[in-house]
Image 1 (tube, rainbow, N blue to C red):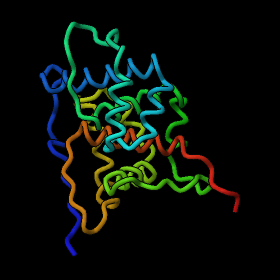
Image 2 (cartoon, rainbow, N blue to C red; image 1 turned 30 degrees about the vertical axis):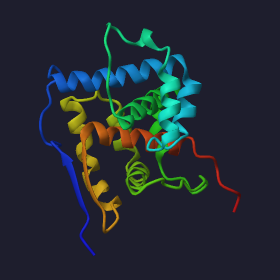
Image 3 (tube, rainbow, N blue to C red; image 1 turned 120 degrees about the horizontal axis):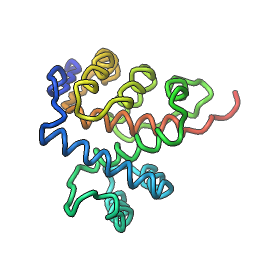
Length: 197
């Protein structure tokens, strides 16, 4: 059995908000937030799906159509399904949960229904959110692709390692990690209570 390996690409580097990559990441984040604010029900329906499924792709195309007003310039934004879904999830968390209540809502609750992970990566993200609710919420307080975000991610490194399965290898960059945590947090906040014991 191989040892678990977690690599957070460029986790220790300082990021300038003026770098083209940072600007692109922030643009995707802002675009997702704008769409979610205008059509939150559509965002919720999309987030109820597995973003790796073909059905998600079809629903995604239908959902983003007609949201040109969220583009502050005459251009196009290209992003992975994960980054866009994460931006939607984070936007809905910020509008649907009181800021000081988020860590408590993310913390482990024995009354909450068990959340079935759709993949090992999602399992790792769910585990991390439940074990480090304050640190997770702190990440969402930062602007994406900034040194503040890097600093906020530092405390969850040990938790991520503990949440990996023994035979799992994972390579992920900061934007993808933030998106995974936002999606997991969204599922945790929206999980119904389980049957009474």
